[in-house]
Image (cartoon, rainbow, N blue to C red; front, top):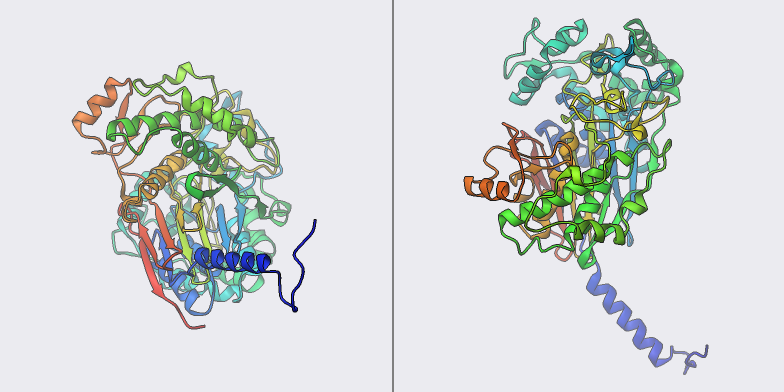
Length: 570
């Protein structure tokens, strides 16, 4: 192809004009970097830990390490070194890089499909409480991975706030007391758990002090020795011995073989140049969010009144949750992600929604359903370079397996209950399991945890919450507030409702709907059931790329904090 000729050593005029136009376009679309640091977490002490690490010269990834470790100390009912989670990362650059770190717990190598079957029957107690309920933890490995690959500070510096909290103590709050009440009997069954987390077998008084010197020592071992400080050496030996003595099946090889898996984040193009970046399998949440948003794009949800909007959102959730039973650990099963997000498939699903009538779940093609523990934790952080992290962490049920390893302070998870222990039966929450999520050696259980971003050339937003199978519906409702251009404070505080295909009903927080709205939804054929209490604890942030301004918000249902911190000199 011919090109313009050079004249007196200059570019051809067409090429020059084209270059100028490109420069102008780049200038118009250049993002203003975040003016300030933004953090939102489920506990004030964890938020401060993130600020402290950034003040030392750390970045968002190291702040995430500090926040995660602090939450392990102050929220033992939601996460911990004995648990795992998902980390969604945004690495700043002209074209940002997204990464997804899978730190989900793994089944021990001795695990098998009939692990919890005794005399032909599933014994649910064994998958909920005690040593046999625990998968191999992933959080310690994630803290090392984030530091070694993306950090610039020594790991011990990022862990210092958590170590201080564990040794000096943290105040008992109302959330701690509530969660302990839910698991009191199980906690009483394990002497070490009762010694550390209860007061003479009872729920500690509010404002009492929780000290965890053994956990401080384990954090110090992790900070100085890295992976070897938890997955090998004296800590690992104590973990394995205690678990096996109590009837568990861990081995030292299970610990030394544990690896963080970096997976491709789920990326779903949306209208108006936006993109959803979310969790891939072994999370089912990202796919549910992608399906729901793409279906709603074909429906007039923004123009609808409150009842009709609820109806349309519920019907998209019904269809998205129906497909969860097809998913599992991608290292073990093939996940039909492309098919579930195919435009033709979603167009067919959206067209099957009757605007005047609820669809009976029984009328849709059958699919297995499931649910996991809903008392996890979530945080999000953005630094002034544009690096960001959204992370959802868990030990499954409150206080996990209610089993603590003496000498380590490590409270173990009960994530093995997230597998389908009986693919013909159900898990702790009464929902049926699926073959794709059956127990197998080395496998990671399916999850709803959905740390998510929505990004465009104009802005960036981060979402996430604890809440088990309700996570995708909660995140979706917050995203709809964002898409509706509501103030950020509305995103985590919006009244919540939920539908998960089975059971076929709308669960909702008290006072979500007025009597008139309830009657109108029932007239459309919906069944409604109040949860009797509020649920979830969403943490969100926002970056306006045109102005550089940032904002963050913490769910008013919890005790967390959101802060905007001025740029910290390095």
